[in-house]
Length: 201
Image 1: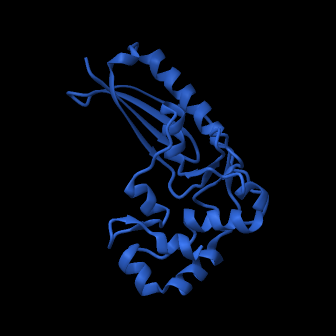
Image 2: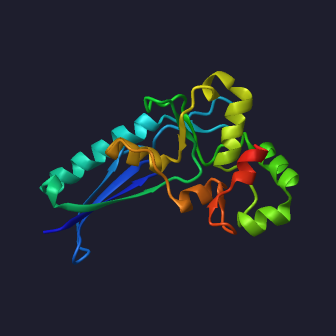
Image 3: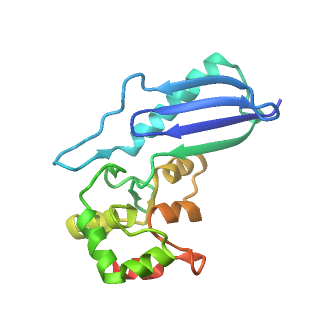
């Protein structure tokens, strides 16, 4: 029997659902933790979480699902990951996380995004990015560059929360056009990386 395993990696919890591929019947579902995940706010407007915490709770939710519906890993035909958007995860060459993730509700990079929109031009942003840079992932990365140069100098790759989970599962660091778009790094006009945004930052 073919199975599908889905995960929702949120800022409050990680949910896991197992279902039959052919029928869509839900066989098991679980959440971890039972209480909401901690959001670290060292300053007003800041919001961070440790990516390792997401991974630990994903494993916990998976064990809960396995307890409800016994299955073999080989029966899982596909894994789907949905996740909290716009978070910034940075790793070094050894795939070690360098700092807590700056998550979606953190507002420290608002002014950086506003300045980028002014520099690039709002019309160009809307035409090619379908949005303004705002407080999205690219702006958060520039905040790290400006305020934590010792961390920035060690960055090998940046990821979104879902990319981090996929890396933990596969050992590979990859993303998607939709992921780059949510980070304001996808040029829809040229169907590729928005180099003009990165050059501005």
